[in-house]
Length: 174
Ligand code: IMP
Ligand code: MG
Image (cartoon, rainbow, N blue to C red; front, side, top):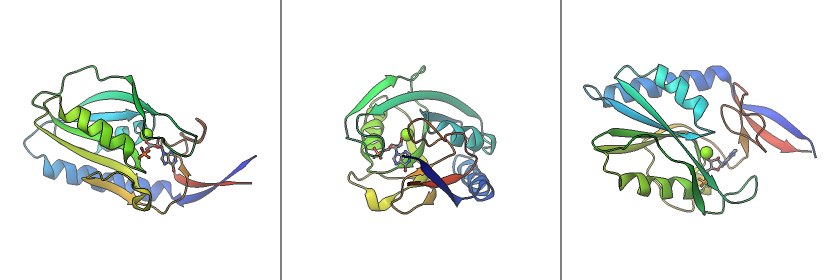
């Protein structure tokens, strides 16, 4: 089976929106320092671009979780593959994700991170597929709401491919 990728959100649209979110975060956290947590691997491209647009002091940490399931669906069982390097006590944490789909991964992750005593915690996702939500998660910053289609690019993969596309594309299977 081969895949055909069609542009859903162009590089220019994505970059412009990330700039806006960066400005919004900079206003919302004025006078504070933010601690960005990148959920690997998908969130990495978004976090780097976003961090460059934030004008308040920023620190970064990374975490990797895997949700067991097929390539296009998560099962709800989440395993920590790589934990954070630093504690969260007293920090203004912003979790950076590529996409919120069923919400299972994020609801598990947020509950776990809240237990580590951050001063505040919010969620920032590049993409949101609200139609697919199974578990309720509060998203503070959303890049784009998209329809229920499988997408790749800007960190998102299909079978580990296409993360490096500078735009968001939909995948059709031929
Ligand atoms: P959730 O637990 O169902 O919200 O799944 C979230 C994770 O599934 C994301 O962090 C992605 O890694 C993956 N995912 C969900 N939808 C897509 C998609 O359209 N393309 C690529 N990965 C996706
Ligand atoms: Mg992800």
